[in-house]
Image (cartoon, rainbow, N blue to C red):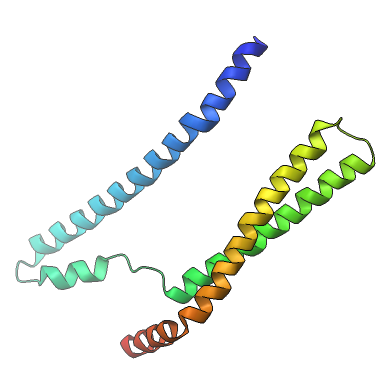
Length: 148
């Protein structure tokens, strides 16, 4: 029975879980599109003279601003960096106190190093993006304030 669990758990985590996540995201987008379509059809039934393009523009998903995207990268960079530092510290603690055998501290340190690397990459991406996109962010902020 343990042998079966050793096979099924990695298959579930590596194959089934990503497929389910993608299916849920696609299903959510389809439902959003169907809801917008239903609203547009109802509006056309009530008022056939309505400008459909203007109506669809109002329902269109507004993408995130550059500043919001950069702030999300800063957030994820800080979180994954702190997670990496914490996992490395936990691995060092396990190793220093001879807890968890010989493999557990190394696993924690390896995951910590990977998380730390991803966090640093996010932070570098944030600071480089902030510097390179400063003019675009400023123009985007002016455009948003003018449209409000």
